[in-house]
Amino acid sequence: MAFVGKSDRFNGVTVYSRDQNHVENFAENLQQSLEQWDAEKKRGVWFKVALEESDWIPVLAKNGFNYHHARDGYVMMYKWLPTHEASNIPPYAHTMLGVGAVVVNEKDDLLVVCERYNRITPWKLPGGYVEPGENFVDAAIREVYEETNIRTEFKSVLCLRHAHGGQFSCSDLYTVICLKPMTEDILKDDREIHDCKWMPIADFLAHPDIHELNKFFVQKFLDNRRDGVAIESKHGIHQLLKKPYTVYHASTQTSSKM
Amino acid sequence: MAFVGKSDRFNGVTVYSRDQNHVENFAENLQQSLEQWDAEKKRGVWFKVALEESDWIPVLAKNGFNYHHARDGYVMMYKWLPTHEASNIPPYAHTMLGVGAVVVNEKDDLLVVCERYNRITPWKLPGGYVEPGENFVDAAIREVYEETNIRTEFKSVLCLRHAHGGQFSCSDLYTVICLKPMTEDILKDDREIHDCKWMPIADFLAHPDIHELNKFFVQKFLDNRRDGVAIESKHGIHQLLKKPYTVYHASTQTSSKM
Image (cartoon, rainbow over the protein chains, first blue to last red):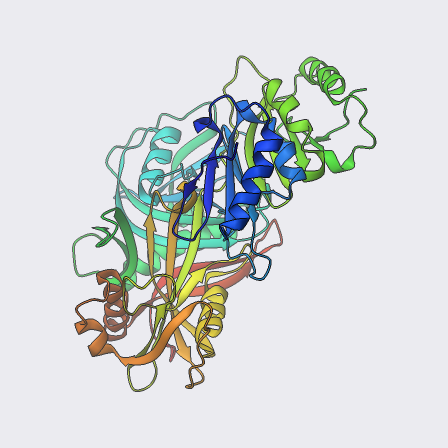
């Protein structure tokens, strides 16, 4: 019995293992399905295989399927059927997102942390990974709160740093957000943070052991404040998709935000 | 016989299926290995399983392994061994990167395309996906050349748009790059592009059917030019890792780049 998949606008088809009932002979069903899809001139054929149906995977592999991506609980495998047309399937996400925060109080002290498991650099900016579905600014505010208990609000985006060949062989995009502290008293997260304090910006910039890129980010904060420029954030709703988005763009600072 | 894995600085261990010779009884070896790693107080245990060894996957799944990620040719599965410590393994990349290009010539004409497979919007900016390991600017220059045959050079970054719930359930980060055209004659890519032309910016901004976000990006080009601000790009080599990186930051334009 051939599988009933879900069609897409690229003339592809996706079979969800979770939607199939009592598959008795997977190899035979797959064979029949592939013949049928071939006759129907389908292009990309996809199998989303849940952990519970992982027996399917070696059979799919033997039938010319490759891995596209995997997440908690499933693997997505695909096969490109056309023989006279190159595959136009884009690779899956290959960039890890991180955030750092430049949090400066009214005395021009900077909030700095020393990580528990990474003490090569003595002091650095608080920060961490962006969660799936999270905005940069929300991630920065969350990480600062988790690591230091300081509550903050958004001022501007300072920098983005893009590099390649990082964790899991991914590229790495690190966004530095300027936040305004709303509280003063630090309560550090002992699990992740070895030490945390308010440090005068001048001391941070003069410290011999602080990483030069961290100094660059803080110097940018000072430059932007002097020059009255910033990368601002603007929320909107996509005209056609009706989904929220955030746009970041450079602006001269005419408002009181700086 | 227990597997010999590669240890990491987080007290984890990774087994590469490709490095193992003649695994006769995978289930039994796995059992022995797990007992040994447990006794050694290992934390994260990883199996990188090549397509050819996909028989291992159902066995790993039955032994409490989950999927972390997959790419062309392999699946990475993991199991967190500590029972009194929550897993601190970050999720894999979950953001697709795209680029668009604002290419404006000396007559203030904008390079616009109409896509073959997506003709809801009549005219839009040229662009596409960022390849693994590619920089935004290189991706924008490449896409413009592939789609239109126009050669360009970098001027500035105009905007970033971040949204969630896109293709493959990933988030989506779209970077708009301002490029200066070095050639004039369009030769469109028939496979991807239905039509392509130089359009006066004023006509683009006044067109009733062009997407408002596309207009916003072009308006930002005009605003930044008027205000003398931009998001610039700076290349460097990481002090400790000795790897190249690119930093993007806001600046006032004192140079001749605008």
